[in-house]
Length: 262
Image (cartoon, rainbow, N blue to C red; front, top):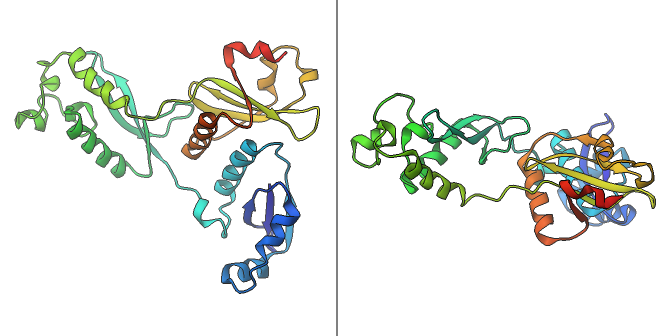
C-alpha cells in the first residue's frame, strides 16, 4: 500500500502496487491531465505499508479509503450503509422482514444508505413474492394489511394463512440473495518470510485480519489473538466473496479444521 499526503498531513490518495516506485512514477507521466497536475501540486510526502499479498492489500486499501476519504480516490470513497433488512421470527412463527440500523456482527439480508431505500426495496419484494405488508415493515398496525383488503394477500396478517405456507415464500425470496460467507480463516503469505497473514470470517461476517508467526502458535485459537478487529462494511464482503469464488491467493481453512495449520 502507498499513501500520498499533502502539506497538512492529510491523505489525498491511497493505492496498491507490487512495485511502488514504478506505480508512483506512472501517476505523473501524464503532464496534461488536470487531476494529475492538481495532485502533484498538493503532494508533500509519500508513505507505504507492507501487506504480504494481494487480498490483504485489497481489504486494507478499501478500509483506508473509507477511513481517510482521500480527495483523489473519488470512485472508491465510502458509501454509507446505515440500514439493513433483517429477518426475525414472530411469536406466531411468521418470518418478518424488518428495517433496522446496521447491527454489529450481524449480517443483514441487504444493505441500504437510507431507511427510504430499504422501504422501497421491501415494497418491490412484497409485490414480487406476494408477501404481507404487516410482516415486511410496510404496515405497523395489527389486523388485516392493505393488500389483504384488496384480496392480494393470502391472509398471514389475519392468521388464515399458516406460518409454514407464508414462510415458504419468504424463504424463496431469501434464496435469491447472495450466499453468506463461510466460517473460515484465509491464510496467505505475510510481510516477511517466516510470517503468515490471516483473515477471519465468522458467523458469515468478516471480523478480523492480521499477521502471525506459525512458530509461536501453540493452539489454533491463538491465531485470533494476533488479529485486529475490523468495522463492518458491505464492500469488504464483496471483496472476500470474489476472492473465495476465484480460489486464488490463499489457503482456506474451515474454522473447525484450523488444527491442520499446526
